[in-house]
Amino acid sequence: MRRISLFLATALVVSSISVAPEVSLHAKGKVKLSSKKVTVNVGKTKKLSVKNYKKKATWKISKGKKFIKISAKKAKGIKITGLKKGNAKILCKAGKKKLVCVVKVKADKVNTANTANTANTATSTPKALSTAAPTASTRPTHAPTSDRMMAEPLKVEQAIDGGSMVFSLDKYYYFYGTEISRTSIESVEFMNTSKVPNTSDVLGAYDISEKQNKSVMAWYKDADKDGFFEMYIGQDGGVVANPNSDYMFCWIAGTAEKSSALDDSKCLLGLENLYTEDVESANYMFACFGWYNFQKISLGDYFATSNLKSALYMFADAGHNSEIYLGKAFSLDKLEDKNLSSMFAGRSGRVSKVVVPKAVKERFDKTKEIAGSIEVEVIK
Image (tube, rainbow, N blue to C red):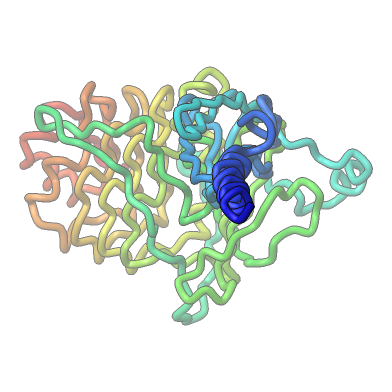
């Protein structure tokens, strides 16, 4: 009897050991995504997760990287941010399983209940100033201040192919550390106030001051509800540019999706409210600005560059067979000759003509890369 009891006890222990692991290793239900289709508005976020999977899943955007951004990656989920109108796909790998979620990004709708109030607000939509030709306007006098814009914290990834700059089109970077893709911005306007309008058409606002004290604010709208944004940058008395202003306007208004609708006279506005006197570095500053169709670009007569020391690829691939008015305040007094050869570089010689002060023309005429391919005209 003692042997039988010992045998039964041993069998019971073995059976309990063999059964218990089977229950703990197998998750209940099928491994799947929380949703196979997600719709998100521009500037808004949605969460996506994987169900019935206990290990860490991996996530990536397999299609449409310029339409969405994924962040807050965790073992079981991510956050999706809509960047501009379009479609994208997200691939989730959970062990040997590959799960796909289709993402549709829609233009954010303005609250119709506040439409009437917005229409009656004088400052809700600043008037566009033409940049096709210099416009005489009164420039505010900026009080002495140490407050200014931050330097662009992110950089474009690019490669050099046969001496020309080639941007990696699937790695657009974002506007001053925000989640807004530069290619989704159709215009930039500088304001002489840091106060963000308290209207329903403002989709978001950011502190882009160097000191992070809200002395320089950026906010954006989508007035025509097409998924492309109007960006505003404001500081009381006018916006003071950082000495390092690399990439400031890079890829702005440079997307193909809106090439037929973009108007070069409404994309670079309020330059009388931008102070560039202390700018020392302007590498890639206007690279690919208005890349697809701009034929005229004007910096007005206040774009001062008396302290400019570095301007590599400053206007590379800007516009399309474009004429650029650099203005009466544009100078190259502190810029070395080696910086000039790449200033207007581009695969297809997109800049065809520049209008400059006489002293600048003399420098350009001595630079073979400019004199041999670009018409240089003196400001009359």
